[in-house]
Each structure stands twice: as C-alpha cells, then as structure tokens.
Length: 186
Image (cartoon, rainbow, N blue to C red; front, side):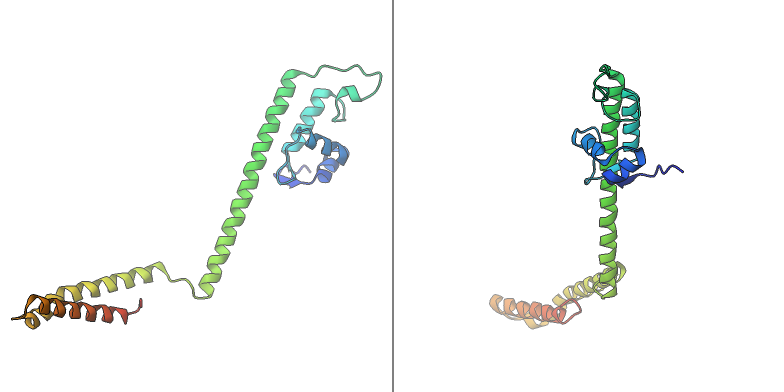
C-alpha cells in the first residue's frame, strides 16, 4: 500500500522508501536537488522528484549517468525534463514551506487555546457579556449622578460668591468620585 499523505521524513526514511543509500539522499539534498523543511524531506513530493530524476538519467540509480562506469558515455540530459524537475523541486519546496507554516500555525493555535483554557479554569477570564453588562451599569450610574449634580449644588450655591461656588462644586464632584471609587471597578 502506497502512503501518499504529506509527511516530513528523515533522509534515512526516504532512502529506504526509494531504494537508495542515505548518503545519496544526503548528496541530493546538499546539491539542492531535494528540498528540505526543518531538516526533513516532504513526502511524496521528494519521491516524485527522485522518480523524475531517474526518468531523466535512466536506470534505478539517481546518480548522473557519467558516474555509472568508465565505459558509459555521458548522455546529455533532456533539458525539458531538467526544467520540469527544477519546477517540481520548487513546487515541492513551496509545498513543504506551506506545510511547515500550517503545522506551526496549528501548534500556535493549540497553545493559545490551552492558555485560554487554563486562564478560564483559574478564574482569570471574565465573560464578555458580564463585562458589557457591568460597563452599562457603571455608565448609567455615572450619567444619573452627573445629571443630579446641578440639583444637589444649586441650593448650596445660592447667595455665594464665585470662589465659594467653585468650592461647593469641587466638593460635590469629589463626593461623586469617592462614591464611584467604592464601586466594583476600584
């Protein structure tokens, strides 16, 4: 059964799957023929690159034909196959990078969810609806207090000079501030 799910594999794992040595896979990685992500190879894109390389150079080995023996005549590789292999390498690299980013994003989301769950268990989170209800209640209280202020100070200001009225108003405002300071959000 062929496993075509995207996976990040080690050089040894890829070598076993395609039937070449780990050293040969290392050479292909070092030469840039096989892209890596976080030091690993993305399967099945790497398999497809190796198969394309075999088709380009012929035979089971992924080595260039000039290295297959002293009597072998170097065959000119098909340039369209090489450019296709390069495109596939670039596509595999992009796929590997997208896959790695998606995995990192998923892990970050999991970590954030775990942190939120812990904060909720510890009682460090307040539901949004509760905060909104409290904010509405506080603003209603502030509004009522401010609207009632003129009626409270009007009688106390009757017949007083400007500096005395200023003092009465200041005292009334400080009383309101002290009352609000005793509230839930102090």
